[in-house]
Length: 332
Length: 217
Image (cartoon, rainbow over all chains, first blue to last red; front, side, top):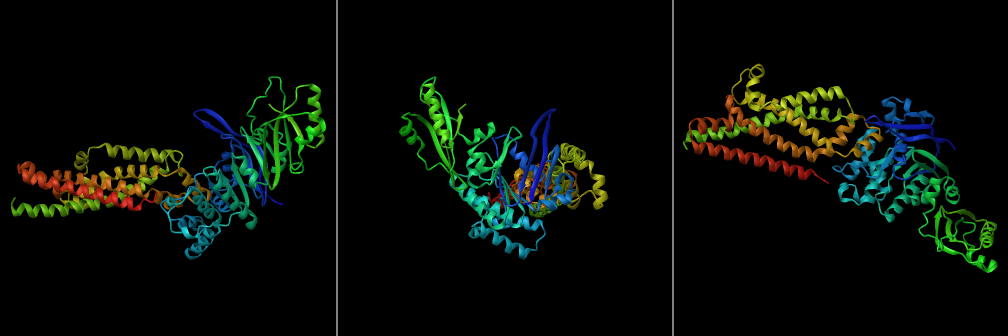
């Protein structure tokens, strides 16, 4: 499949009062057509800057951002505006015009591309129907809930038939239930329109719910990139581990106790490992924390257990888990 | 109070309205674009341009710091050049307009500054030109605030129009000055002052009402 975006060695440096701050360091990645691509990182990691280089709201300091093979930095102002018609964006703060009705807001993106009034109204109505807000066309944004505002923003963003939708923390201001609904809507649009979606978030739950691939940004650099299921089951970088595995909330019961983390994916999640361990080896482990999550319909889980005291028993337990195909790692 | 003065006051109300209306209108015709330029050329804005912003900003600041009474006198030759006379209601519109322009410009600039930067970012991301963004995103979003500022400006012009009496402008101000102040007719003075206060309050209330009606959030 074709690449929508190709980023090569992108750097972004801000100069402020003589001080330099590097927001992006040598970021190279590709976004494929039709996928939902997640970019995740802690606050201040540079992900918002990164997404703004994708429609040149931010200029890169060096490196190239290509959109369907075109270097964005090389475009003149008029060409850039033309390209931006195919790159839509939604925001954490929705950014609707509060003094205009819902339908007038949706019409804006069509007005900009010069669509005549009647066609514009019709298209805006269709878009509102897609996002499930037909009844709110003549309301003002102030009378809508956060989730509804974001739906209006999505309708506005999609009205001009873009090729890509950039979502900058689009669900971060919404509660979990509404977040779920908005993500379902995005997934639906992605499938029906084969629209490429790029999602910036700091929430792992957003990525695991709808993303195909994910890039992890840490301190301005690309820490890890890959299929969501690979990154989830076997994170390589420290930043990825930190995001995927919640930190262990408990200390071992004994100060010399040793903790390990076992990770299982869908293929083993229906096997009762702990019970089998006790039955077959007679050794017990103390479970300190455990969770499972569904990534693209497959269950992934991880567990932090405290090993028995004797050294050889510890080895037996680890070997038992490894033999069962579980990934075993130390806990920091 | 004699019939003569009563008639003069009624004419004065009309003249004050005419001066205020036209001076406000003309000052917005020039001051509004100036305010938009001041806003959009300032640092970090759509059409950032330091030299333009500096020059216009400096002119506006100088014009604004001149006391209106001094401006009235300074502008006499200019007024004569434009309207052919420096005395009367029509003539007073010129200095009133010039005096109000910098105030309008700063007021408009400050209203536009209130618009959330996110809305501008959204417009940019949709590929809107800077002019389109100003006309269809920024100004509509700032409209309630612009209307409120408008009411303050009109009330200021009305207050200034009373001063125009000093250099032979008409209106209530001139009557207050001539009959009330120079001739010690306290009843005329208080009547005109009361009328002026009522007019300012009326303008303010209308402005607030329009702004509220317009404000959707």
